[in-house]
Image (cartoon, rainbow, N blue to C red; front, side):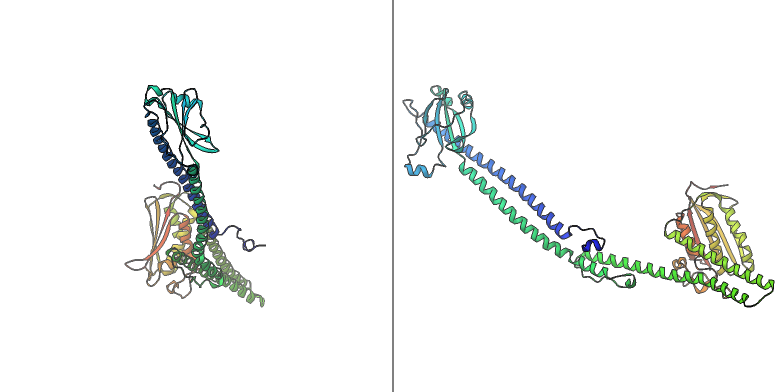
Length: 484
């Protein structure tokens, strides 16, 4: 079994080999196209030069044919020895004169056989056209021009001059050029692959260093950071992003550990109290009234345990994004007043006045249970800090419901407002007048979770005149609000 299968990574080509292969294919394809284009361009250039040379020779030979005063035709040719003729045979231009019936009238002195004649081309040339063609002569390809001699006068009206030039050298030049470019393409392809392989290795070397260091970081060593050297801006940014992510992971793990420890403590405290009271009650027989007191105390701890469990469940649902509102049209003013009435007894016991500032009726489309819990948690939190007054305000801004709870306590001086919404957070001022700690430290965390699940927000500030102010904004999900 390969390492790739063991680590869960699908096997495949490396970035280095892929880059080298793609660069090589790209360069090879480009050079191949260049080779083809060059071959075609060179062939066209040579063909133009050969055609121009043939046409020039045809014009010279045609003029020579008409020079004789007696009308006898002859070619303008140099006298070459047989050895010279053999040595320059590839450069010799062949010439031959035909009549319109295809009968040879004259041919170049260095030709031992007639040029191949095409009856159709001969007929067109006899009619006065210049006709080009490619033919085979002496086992080699030749370029041929049928030149009408009627242009020289009436006595040559039925004569056609055929001039041919061998293409041996032309084809050899083209083949040599194509072969040269093919060899060059192969060499450059090999050089490209080797260069790309080296370049890709240099490019991914820092990545391997980052990977090696990242693999050494586990859940127990999240305080470590990647120190791999990267000499380019992109790699430095990658290392920075990874270290930032590790910092967030470390913060998340630390928060999870604190949350687990705090949750365990909050759940263990009521259980310990219940166990202690029950054990004391069972040590000896007691009066019914004493058992009733133990049961009442145990019931209070059970209620506290149940409330803490419900709050933890709400936060867990928020973390898993399964906390979904069930909006319906409700009278928000009536819901807030009912919560205030339920907490009136707690407020009176602490000598605090509860003031509700809300319209007679305010119909909105939100989750009523979420609104109740948010209001309860904010007012309960305010009662633990207020000196004499807690006010509850409710209003509409655009299509959002805005709930504001104020108190006249010490405010948030010296406290980060965002930390108040952390789970199990308690400041020194969170203590009640009798020194006991009120709540579980989850109330404001739940307020923010419920607000955000409803498309809103929650924030806390210190009032200029003293005391704290918490504002929750809830977005409606089923239309705009309407006032009664």
